[in-house]
Length: 573
Image 1: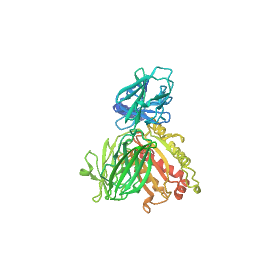
Image 2 (image 1 turned 180 degrees about the vertical axis):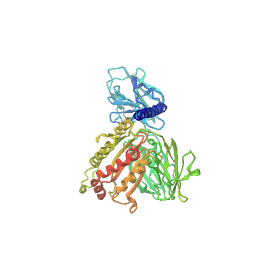
Image 3 (image 1 turned 90 degrees about the horizontal axis):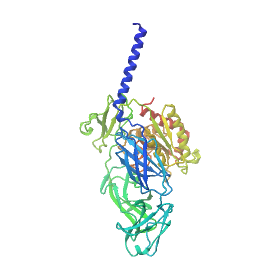
Image 4 (image 1 turned 30 degrees about the vertical axis):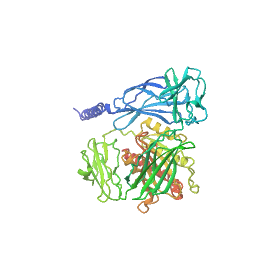
């Protein structure tokens, strides 16, 4: 046999072995890979929708989301079957909706359905402009939207689930006689029906607040909090048209501001260590002060610091055999301890000194400890061997055109300058083979997060510049969902990389490093309910002259630094 024949035979054999391994791997992991799927059918009677879609073998569950024409998510549900029934009584007349289904695997990765169902709701509904408050001495005029002539619609008025009046609905301005509620504390429900099918419903209140009771769920009453940003979470307050937040230190009011969401991140700069605080939230309905609902909570700030968790330098979902993982301590003090066998690193950990080599799928647990400080939380990094390095990123530069920068530096507004910076970033990522999706500047967060999740990207990156109320702040900060988020490591890598090119050395001026911060659901583009892997960068302050000048003079360098951080983290050369 000739040398050439031997070489040819060896090459064929090697190719066969490699192909066999790849095919075997695909077969063995076929139940773990999310594949494309479609909606098979959507049938509805009025607001009752029956939806059937293809089953995805790798899906642990399915997330159903309904978006209105303003990209607001108006309905969400987690289901475990591919044949579901939905009661969508919140639909509004003449509004266009998009129904999207996401298949979600055990790692939280998702894939959107190929053919989202788009439809226009044509049934009548109560106008959102209706007041929910009845006036004791006046008949009430109820505004109804839609064509009432095409069907035989009925309207029913309930009190305590008992029908007190029903008739055919023929007019878009329906009058409720005051005799139904006059002189009484009562809630009446008005519902539109089409042959027994519920179309739309509204509750009206006489001498009773339309605002439901409030309850603050975080922070806990009487708790001692770590000295960092405080996340306020409350529930209730349904139907309120405005919310007011007040923060007291002792009896002194230190901050008062209107809020829009039921999750608010309060900057640690407002608080002092070892001091007691009281937070009051008020839910108001229009100008009816007598119907305001309030909730409050008291807590104390800790005088003992808690260590931040360790972070790593590589994506846990994109490692190969032999990959070395570096573990970093973000604190000035303390040591990292780790395990790779499932044990708790607090009691059985080995002190980290050298990189950890990945040889198989494994779970790395880490903790940072220092005798005079509180331990960090225990972090878990689940590494999965993955040969696929096809990475996709959704870039979401700011659309805040009203946020003007320091004009003398040439900084126009946040939207324009962050989009110009993102142009450089997009170009660098595409040159490296990354699939890039990008928002439309005049859209909104709801659309961007929906698009990002639809594409199933590996990273959703929001790019912003910062500003402060008194225009006296400077520095860089990075936002993620929470301390235990899978984005924690990459966020720290971004923060470290950007500080490495910043004009202020944080070792000389700690204010330059504003740190990795946790929104805990308050920011849509890092909220894990909307995007599985989202990070928001605040690249310096456009209202501080030297920060604004640094951005304007270094856009390409900043973009290259961000891009290179992404490429290194995902193992792209």
